[in-house]
Image 1 (cartoon, rainbow, N blue to C red):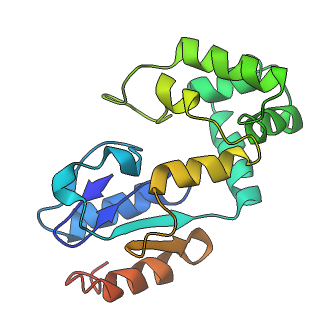
Image 2 (spheres, rainbow, N blue to C red):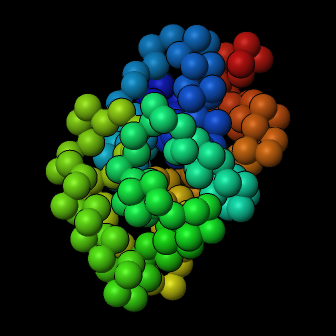
Image 3 (cartoon, rainbow, N blue to C red):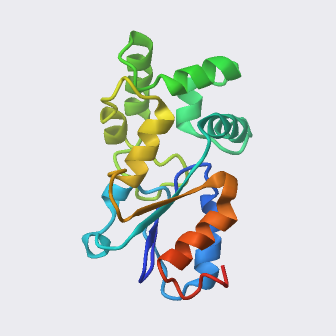
Length: 190
């Protein structure tokens, strides 16, 4: 999450957030990083009136990207480790486990408990996964998939008129358009 004088940028995993964070850091004076993959509810109160900017990605593409990224040896994502059964499950099984993580079936409850046992209490010092014990405990919507749960968790109230969401598939155009809409002076430099 990054704050500026005119907006807050929420970086959801696998939606171009690192690129956008670098652009914001390079172009917007006075920007302030709040935390890596911090969800909207962790926004400090002094920034609560600012518009929120984020990106959405086609869920199928998001799941494929998440899986491919996490199969790299240097990643070490505890969510992937648990849901891939210690790197033993194939793509289909791992993604099925992730999609259904909010489900109320016994397997999903067991995965959530394993994550609660493994994840930290706080996001302080978070280097990637962006989940805590409490975030897993908050999975109380068995009718939605993981991506939908995570998107809402990261961006807050999806009906909020101050929420500006661009599409990953049109990353540059949508982001710059949102910056112009918010009257960000550095929009053309971005």
